[in-house]
Image (cartoon, rainbow, N blue to C red; front, side, top):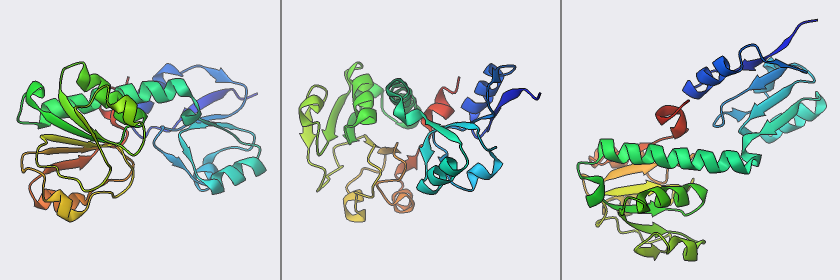
Length: 224
């Protein structure tokens, strides 16, 4: 009988380390492991055996339907509170690293604006707060918790970025207009942690703003 070793799909450095950690581990059924940021679609499952188990992050509806018809069990990392908490903390640590590397100012002298105060936004505010970094937060909810970290909690509209040295977005939606983008300083660092950018990145770069989107940040800054 063939042994069921995990098939780790190496799409980033995390998966490289995970493959070495799972080397020699035998599972009861065929097992596939994907990175948390990979969207599992029906086409993805073409390489997966019937009756297998799949560990993944995001799953498309067509993949769910196909998995049910082929007795494939899907385990989503996003259903794990522990994973969500650790991933947010590692994302916050990676964000701090980017600020230190990209900003021309000392971290202590930066004025930071965080868009969104969900799990990731809160983790970023927490780590910056421990360093006594001045920050504001824009949020449509979680206003009271945000006040524990922010100088000001602002509405998620009519943005004026002129006071800020660093802008961090966690909202996966294009909420910032090109006109609002004009208020950013040229030496501002824009860090997008969402799956979809809140700004027109090409226009931001045209304005000489240091702007980029950082998907799967823990894979880049702390993969092990």
